[in-house]
Image (cartoon, rainbow, N blue to C red; front, side):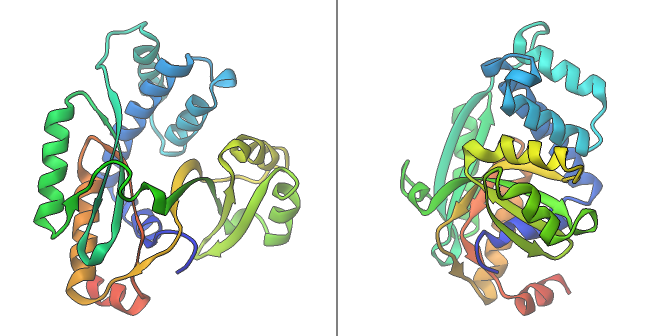
Length: 249
């Protein structure tokens, strides 16, 4: 698969489990809280908050949980003071790993991340060591049952979509970060439902991993994904479908 990290597809499949949904709730609550803290509690004037709330609703998070997270962010309710940090490193086979973190204890979190990377034959890198391999993009996942590719192109290209790609049961719409909101609004105006809309890090190129290295990369990504302080983790690896199927058997 070209154009983005294979992990994005693998993770989507894994997120269907109850445990993954629970972890998603934790991440979404943190994101809503920090978005409200930085931009206020009004979704109409805070695009980051609006995106987080829409993601929470799509994940079937109760409205009361969303409301509490917003109020913790605005200070109407007491809450934890999270710090936003990025960490960079390498996994097996020279795979670049980029992590976005929200933590209330930076020293604890960096020690745990360093341990996980080392456990799976990786290493923590300096700031900037792998960030240059990724670019920030808006990505909207539209279930293919909701529209045709032609209708999707008609609705989004004029609004600023850069690319539309078919991916299993979805169309993947890519935009520049500053065009994400406009493309979302264009989809809503065209009554085309989307499953998720987020800002993500796209790798410029991919490292193909096979055999034991492929197994180690997936185990590392799973371990990082399960860490409660890591909001998002990106990597530039590629694994062919045959190897993936053998690993799943």
